[in-house]
Length: 189
Image 1 (spheres, helix red, strand yellow):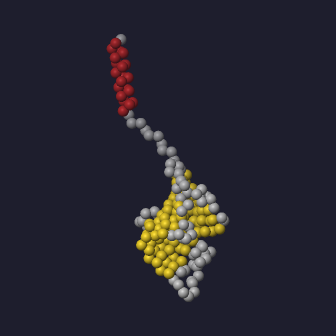
Image 2 (cartoon, helix red, strand yellow; image 1 turned 90 degrees about the horizontal axis):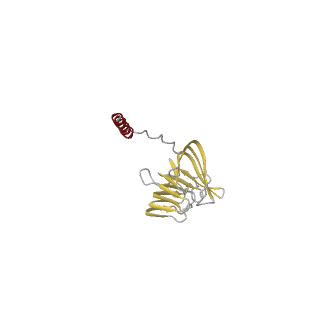
Image 3 (cartoon, one colour; image 1 turned 60 degrees about the vertical axis):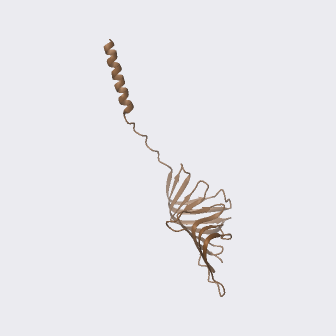
């Protein structure tokens, strides 16, 4: 009887060691977020209640862990303030962060009032930020308008380019004579 109990105990110990050392399969990773294709997206930034952004894109992916949305294949990006088109945004992709700010590798912005074309950043530089409260932040900038051309580094400005700041500016102003027309559709100087 003792012998049978001892054999049963050894069998239980061996089976326990086998089960404990056996690798357990990891559970399947749940699908993270949502992916939408051929999207028209409207963003109502909480930090700027008078504004709304409208995007058309090939794809939008939403990541619940970071609460960010990645907009790729951007076909159009427009900002409206109190129902009026304010600016157009051109970029390869846009990340909308958890507080509705936009992060971009680089971008071109057409600001209708003032007829500004603003090239923010370049490929290989730090990303560009469009802060819904403060405006633009970029490692470099190249601004053109019918009467001026400006380049600089460490650029910061509000959305209307009314209070810009930058480092190492190169400025060229065109004065006298007739001012060329605004090349931006719907823009005015």
